[in-house]
Length: 273
Image (cartoon, rainbow, N blue to C red; front, side, top):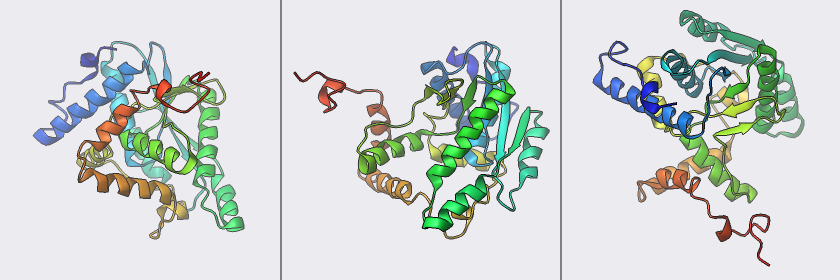
C-alpha cells in the first residue's frame, strides 16, 4: 500500500488542531508499519482482537477508517473474548462497535476458572497462562469466522519492553514480530501499532473518549495490582533512563531493525569454525 493513500481526510473528524495532528501522526505510523511489513493484502479478512482497553480501541478505530480509504479491499471483524469474570461489561464493548456498524463477534470462554484455580493452587500470577488461553481462543475463532489474519494491539513500548524482558530475565535476544504465522499455521498475526508510542495511544483515547473496559480479572483490575511486575520494572527503568537518554526508545526500536548476527554469540547463526 502507498502510505499517502492510507492517511484519511481528517477535516470532518474533529476541529481540534491538536487532535488532528495527533490523528494524522497515528495514521502515518500505522500506515508505515502496514507498508513496511506487508501486513495487509487484497482480499484479507482480519480479525481485530478487542479487549475493551485503550490499545485495541485505537487499533480497531484506525483500521476501520483505513479500510474505507485503502487502495485495496479487505474486511474486518472485531472480536472480543468474555473470559468469564463476574462484572465484565460486555454491553459497553458491544454498544461501541454497534454504533459504528463494525461487524463483531462476542465469544464466551471460561478462562477465569482456569486462571483463578492456578493462582489459588500455588499462589502464582498466571498472566502468561491467561495470554496463551486467549491466544488459542483467537486462533480458533479466526478459523470459525473465516479470517486469515489476526490483528493485535501491541505498540512500540510493548516491543521495547519485551526486548529487555527477554534479555534480562530469560537470556534470549528477541521481541515481538510485526508479522508472523500463528502457532496453528492457519493464520497470520499482525501488529499494526508497532511504531506507535503508548503515550500517543493514551492521549488519543482521551481525546476520542473511547470506553475503557477491564476484563475484571482480580489480578489485573483490582486496586492492588501485582500482575506482570517484571514488565512494570522494565517500564520504570526505561522512563528513568530516558531522563538522561531522551532518544533511548527510538534507539532500542532501531536496534531491532539493525541486527548483526556475526557480532553475536549464537553458534546457530554464525559458523565460528
